[in-house]
Image (cartoon, rainbow, N blue to C red; front, side, top):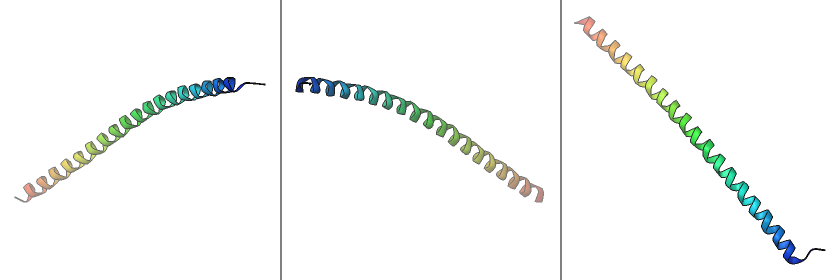
Amino acid sequence: MTTSEERIARIEGVLEQMNERLGTVEVRLGTIEARLDQKADKSEMRLLFIASLTLQIAIIGLLGAILAQI
């Protein structure tokens, strides 16, 4: 039979292991979150580049049409 002190020591050991594992999980989640943010930034930059390029082409087309009528 175990004493209450042994039970408490065992529970404290389990809690310590859980805290260590939670710390590891938090670090991994932080890393994953950082990677997702980088991918989102890259995707956003691509979208903005394509949108600005499309607008520039449209403006050049409009200017070409206006100049062709002059």
